[in-house]
Every structure is written in C-alpha cells, then in structure tokens.
Image (tube, rainbow, N blue to C red; front, side):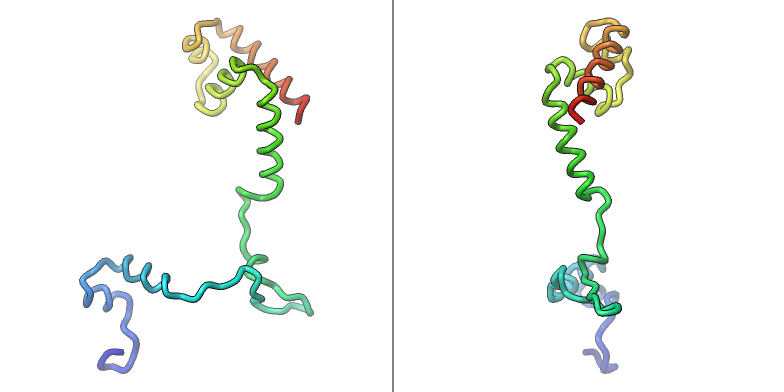
Length: 125
C-alpha cells in the first residue's frame, strides 16, 4: 500500500519498478488463484451454470473434430499424386495452371485429377 492507504495502480507499479506495464499485468495475472472450469458461477432455476458453460470454441467444436477426422480418413484413400494436387490447390491456393506447371501436366489433366479426387473423397464422407 502506498501513502494514500490504497493499492497502487498498474501504471504506478510499472513506473516504480521501471518495467513495461504489460509485464506488471502478466505478473499480477500469474498470481491469481486458478478457477475450475466446473466451478458454478451462478444458479439459474436450480441448474448451476459453470465456467465451462460460459466459454465456447467454435474452431474446436465436436463437429469440427469429427469433420477433420473424416476428411483425414477420406484423404487417406487418395493416391500421393492426388493428395499433392489437392494440397497445392486447396491448402496453398494455387490455380490449376500453376499446379499444372509445377508438376508437368496440362491444366485439363489437373482439372480431371482434382475432380476425380474430390468425388473419391465424397464416397468416404
């Protein structure tokens, strides 16, 4: 406590310790007691609402995990050449012409191989 009988602010600590404000914030957060994800925050009509109920992760939902697993298994049924073409097209964002130039075939062949690979994967999804 300072002379004013209050806790110092983050900015005051930063100036006094001569360290960046962000370091002070991180240090203060590091000493907080952890909270269980299953700790009730409040009770609504008899049902407790926990921390876990209040956080969500749309990028890692059960549906997304299942889709990723299914997609991975479907890709596993493709030839190495088909995998390479799809990787270049959909993960690296290359055009069919760029893929054709890189692997030494025509754009029409890339189109046909890509279409066949996608159709093959649909069978497993």
